Length: 105
Image (cartoon, rainbow, N blue to C red; front, side, top):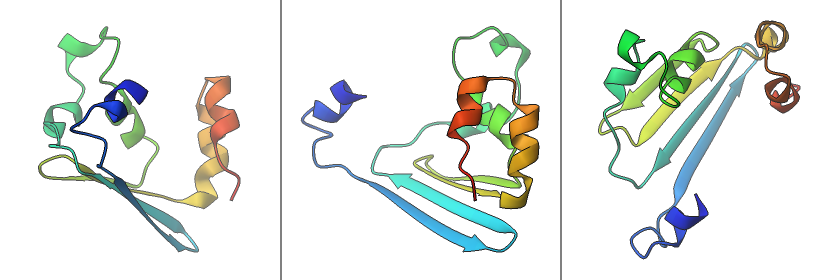
């Protein structure tokens, strides 16, 4: 990541993060100045990619979120989740490092 940030073409790029909180939902929108990517192929689990070392985070996140939307060309994502369901997320996720990162709301 640091290497990519240091490249001349990326030095002046920024990331915009917006939060919106309601009693039963939190929406986070993240947009960068990159060219985007073909997000569509990552919204479905492809048997050919099951053993890949990357590319499964998006499909995994879909199971924990109440909403996930990419905006073409793929440089903006909006996610929505219910903060009241964070306890179930902690219980279902088997990775102990992730549980420590789940914010308490």
